[in-house]
Amino acid sequence: MEKQYKVGDVLTGKVTGIQPYGAFVALDEQTQGLVHISEITYGFVKDVSHFLKVGDEITVKILEIEDGSQKISLSIRALQEEPTPMKKEQRKTLQERIDEDDAAGFQPLKDKLQEWIDQSGQK
Image (cartoon, rainbow, N blue to C red; front, side, top):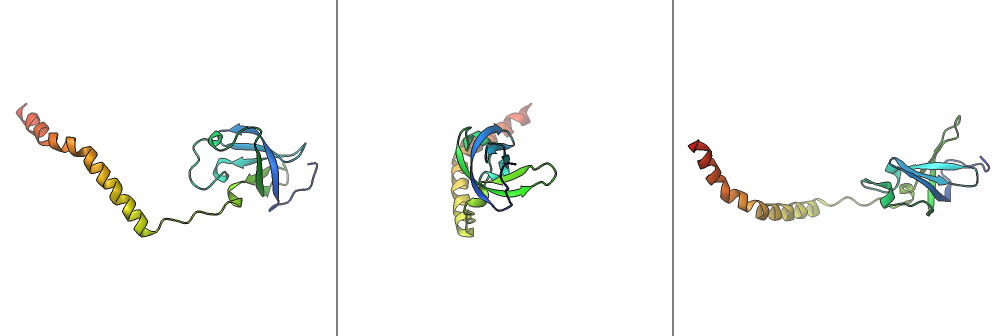
């Protein structure tokens, strides 16, 4: 490593590679670290390339430096504000909306159900 880095440092780096499991970030000419897919943002990340591209300049925080290999684990998420969880009332309202939409969508099946039951008994 060209510079001495320590856990907790907040740095600007450049994305040099994207993999299914995360993004490699150059911290200087000779040092790079990995932002694991779970450290990109809060919530589920299916595809790293939806959030980062090679060449992007990003701010990262050093989470860990392995002594022997000098592998550096980085995080973007650690610099973000954690989202507040939905209140119970909000979840209930959302669930009620989903149930209403589903009920309308399944109505044609409900209308056909008795007909299908009757047909299956005739065989």
